[in-house]
Structure formats: C-alpha cells, structure tokens
Length: 380
Image (cartoon, rainbow, N blue to C red; front, top):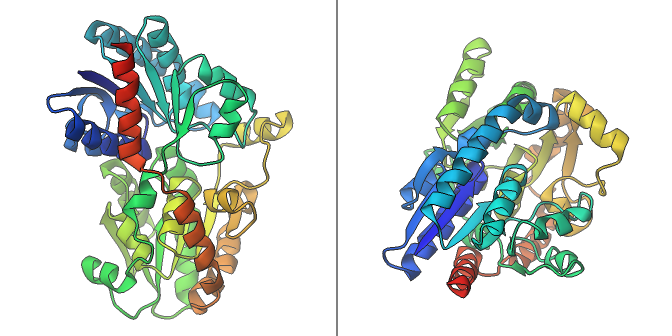
C-alpha cells in the first residue's frame, strides 16, 4: 500500500509524523512519501520536498511566493500521479493542498484533508469548496463536523493528537528538572512562532517585553524554544544585535518549556492550544502584514472576534489576545506581569482548561490512521 502525505509547516509535520507512525503500525511494509519535515522523516516518510518550502503566511507573502509555489505544486502533482498512491492526505496548508487534492481526486485517487480550515472563523462557503477537493475531512475540533454535514461532506472528528500527548495534570517540577532550570525561579516561556514572517513581526516585540519584565521582576528567567534550525539562526542573530541576559534558547522542546513555565508569551496558533493543554497562563500576541490586515478588515472576511484557540474553544475570552496594533511591548508587559507575580491569579482557569482538554480527546493519530486506511481500502 502507498499513502502520500503533504504537510505545510512545523505543526503539520508533527501531525503527519503521528499519522505515519500509526499507519506503519497497522500496515507493515506500507510506503509513505510526499512533503514533510524532520518529524515525518523520523517516522519513516520519504520526503520528496521539505515542508519549509510551503511555510508561507499572509496574502502579501503568498503573492510574492506564488510562482514558486505553483511550480512546486505542478511538479508534485506529476510525481504523485506517476507514483499512484492508494490515498492522498493533505495535512493543513489548504491554500496549497486543496488544489492538489482536487487534481488527484479527479484522477481517481481517494483524498483526505487532515485539519479542517477554520470554517467557524471564515466564510462557511469554504466548507463546500473543500468538499470538491477531499473525499474525507479529518477534524481536530468537535464543532467542525456539523458545519460540513450541512454541505453533505463526510467529516469526522478524530480528536486532537496533542490532547493525548499532554498529561491531564502536567508536572512542572519534572519539566524544569529535565531542562536543567531553577526549580524556584519565576519563568517565562517565549514562543514567537515557527515561520520566518512570524519571527520578523513578533520576535523583537516579544523580546522587548521580556527585557522590560526582567527589569520589573528581579530574578525572572526566560526560555525560548526554537522550532527548527532556521528559527534558531534568526533568534541568534536578533540576540547578537540585542543581547538579553537570562534568556536560554532551546532547540525544540517547546512542550517541556511551557509545562516548566509560570506563564507563556506566544504567537496565535497551535502553540496556544499547547499552552492550554500544559495548563499554563498565557498571553497571545499576533501580527500579520498591514496589507493582509487591511484587506481582511475591509472585506469583512472574519466571522469571529476571538482569534486564539483557547478562547474559541471556551466560547469566551479566557486568555488575553493582543492582535496587530495592540501587540506592543507595553501591552504585553501589562498583561503578563500579573500572571507572573500572582501564581493563583490564573488558578481558577485550570478546571476550564481541563474540561477543554477532555473534549479534544478522540483517538488522535490512531483514529486518523484508521479513517485513512478505510478510505484507501474502500477504493481498492
């Protein structure tokens, strides 16, 4: 059996690795190939292209890279048609994957899309569009399948794999010991994102906020996990120009860094869900390009006034979000300082976090692998 997998960034690489491991456990000798990163390669996927090639965000960035991405997609489509997989799984990256899925579906290859686009946040018409590309949608969140059902699309809640990776009550002391961190110092974890554009917009204000907090909170320790080698190089360059004593940069290990922390400063995205599962107080910051922000605002493309996953899943603002022009060092400091100085200030939210954690359990990678194999075998 052959299954093709295409992931578009670090979070997709993790999902793809979990799926690949489960597929291999169920079908000895299965061949897995496509686009992925280090996690998928370690799980046995033959990555023809590194997923970093697809990690482009924002309208203006996509337009700048569009000719290259279209060439890449055409070449990948030709190679996949020649390889003849029993099923194709596009993992997130809808702007790249949906067109690829549509072409493969028309060629008779069963297609699945793993990670629903945010149809609850953007126009619901995207759900119908996705159905023209994918035979099956694998959803990470329980509120998503009913939206697809209204359009007659087979969508299944498989649970979020992260919900199975985190303990219900993470051990902060053990995480600090594993990372070699002071057991008693106040600790802030900083996660400015994994994409180059995210680092360009968020790294400087995040570090400026951390510098100001150190001046206000004596002994504050800082830890910053770098998602990959390119991120590490970007972070090291920023620190060379603007040193920040007391900051320890890690290669990966973001989960442990969040569990070890007293509070987390992070970019909106999967990391916010990880911080929720780590049961840590957080402040979420984000910036997109000014052009993209103006277009989204003027055209009314967003349907929600909550951006981070903890607030979306809770259906109320349980964590502070500082978006676009609000994402300044001064605002970040004002939001983070109470979380760091009063460990009990956030204690009332832990039961809310735990309830969301339980809702997200649904089998994760194992459930996704079962659905993909059923799709592939059903077409054979």
